[in-house]
Length: 191
Ligand code: G3P
Image (cartoon, rainbow, N blue to C red; front, side):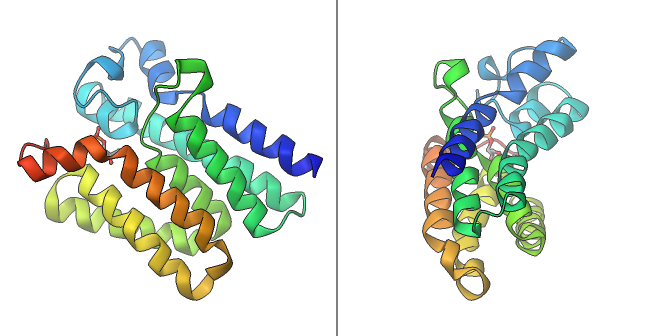
């Protein structure tokens, strides 16, 4: 129906706002797309600009996923329909219409969508991300591990969302293809 269509389009457009690029520009830092991994995301902003800019980028990217899902649920849409809005926001972040379709990897936006779906799911993702990050010192390993674990976690409590969250995990892994190549070659940067 019309509400879902409008929310999905709105979520895609919101996701298309590349926070990392705009925040670095506003704070006078170099464009993260030209430095480090070249990824416009919180990890690369942390690596190439400042920790404060990275935290602001992370929160903004998280909100891009959280707000559309929260709004969809507030408007009485089903959790599956709300999750579709999260998927649209993530696609916007990865393929932003305002930034020549060259976007980020979708980790924070995926987490934001999960936060609005089920805060406990987001808490387990954050915990797993931090533990993996501390163990391997590579953000990509932590993000890929979370992407693989999320459908498994969802299987018990949120099985109706498995198709959408599984697709989001798949997109996240695809967006890390260059990281995976570097990990296999043994030259992925530590953080
Ligand atoms: O959040 C993205 C992270 O998983 C990888 O980022 O910059 O190391 O490619 P990066």
